[in-house]
Image 1: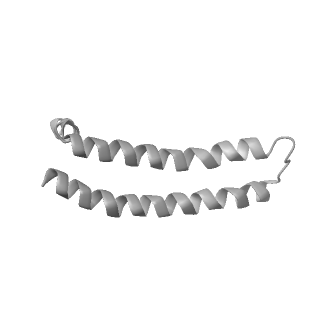
Image 2: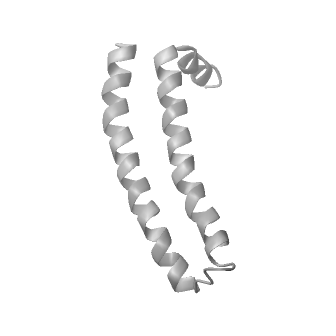
Length: 82
């Protein structure tokens, strides 16, 4: 069980897909957190509801991107590993 992840990551195609999708999803998770900190300070002074409304767009974008990555990377990974 400890060897399988290492063997999978030795495959160049699988490693690239794992890294790209992980970085993309981490970006969409971190951005709403950073936005909420910056928008609650001066000069915006958003309330909790205002920050929530501005954070809903990255949430929807992250959900759509994760679905797109899943659909694309599954086919690409099957073609690469083959």
